[in-house]
Amino acid sequence: MSSLTDLSMLELAAKLASREVSSVEATQASLQRITQVDPKVRAFLRVDEAGALKAAGASDSRRKAGSPLSALDGVPVGLKDIFLTEGVATTCGSRILEGFVPPYDATVVRLLKEAGLPLVGKLNMDEFAMGSSNESSAYFPTHNPWDLTRTPGGSSGGSAAAVAAREVFGALGTDTGGSIRQPAALTNTVGLKPTYGRVSRYGVIAFASSLDQPGPMARTVGDTAALFQLIARHDPLDSTSANVETPDCLTGLEDGVRGLKLGVPREYFADGMDPEVAGTLRASLEELEKLGATLVDVSLPHTKYALATYYLLASSEASSNLARYDGIRYGQRAKDARGLKELYTQTRGQGFGAEVKRRIMLGTYALSAGYYDAYYLRAQKVRTLIREDFTKVFQQVDAIVSPTSPVPAFKLGAKVDDPLSMYLMDVYTLPCNLAGLPGLSVPCGFTQAGLPIGMQLLGRPFDEARLLRIARAFEREHDFFRRAAPV
Image (cartoon, rainbow, N blue to C red; front, side, top):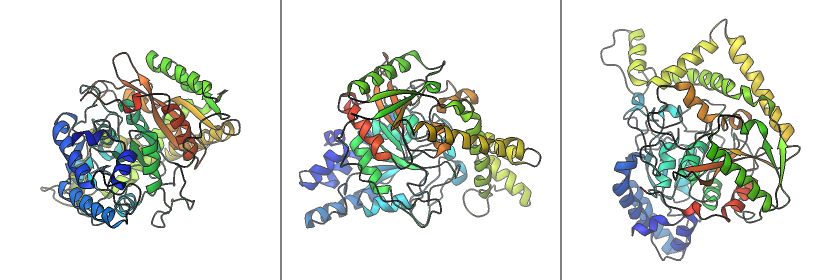
């Protein structure tokens, strides 16, 4: 039964359609795999065994009656703990929400349920999605299945690790500055950050509202495309949701890259990149060229300001969004507080971790009287310049190719006391969020030590189908997409 977990989502879906395998069997295999490896990986904060098996049984009944809800009906998946899930505790990796049980589903959760996918459980994450290593989780760090002494990346590290360790067939994460793509690169998985507004944020616990975007994580490009199509829906409950048609990403997935122009930004190949990452990326670019793509040298001149711009804007929005955690409406409340001011300070002091406090303080400072114009307003202006850089480049090319992470997975604890070094892990991913563009990380090789390396693809707004097509052309040439982590 455990061999079922080696199947891709689409392979499992085909077996479910032919009734060669049942959803209950697949879900039991997933739960068995979690029992076997999660004590070492620690990807799950909580497993909903009863709920997943009930959903799987309902799926089997629909398949028997010839009325599946979708092509992926019955395929078990996991959820980052940032998505509100009715009746299942949702903590966003924070003590301040410990024990909080939402009364309703996030839109993406509802869409997965309506498509018939059993939801196996809630996956570990950096607290309030603030981090690049999963070490700021208030509960425990997640370990990389490729080397248990190393980080799987963050903040969607639990989602990436669970997929890489074959605990679930796919998962949802969120990406604010690279939090889907960076952990995908570090775990040999595929991660798609959709265009801002493509996937509803309703019921997604907010970090930075102008940057956050949910997206799929899976083992193959086809799985990623299929999962993406289920959640890419216009949602009137989200005022930033784009009223665009749901894309058909599977039909043209095998069309290849011949005739496409791919931009290679010189600013993304600067000093500081790990030599093995740089070498693997150069080799990958040559492969894309052999497959028929044309490589074009391009420039994104304001990239050097992206890191500072991102952390000012994201921290400012976090300062505002996290003001709601006051010990009064929901979540944890300080027990010994005397008076309203003490209730606020003690609840937030006890409930928030160090990284969250750091970003709240930075954002509050940037928004304060006398500093708003110098920091926040100026950062917004630079964000516009970064967006214009991409607009100009996309007049010349069809997509952009770059590294996803400057280094492979690093040791747990190596950067936890050096916030700036940790922030630099997102240097290649966060410009995409500032511009609201789609981005995808696809596996492109391994270091000599056996650590995964990821290649990033960036595209025009709402052009996710083209990114998936490019990634699939590259995937067809390699077997490492299906290589199992040694955990």
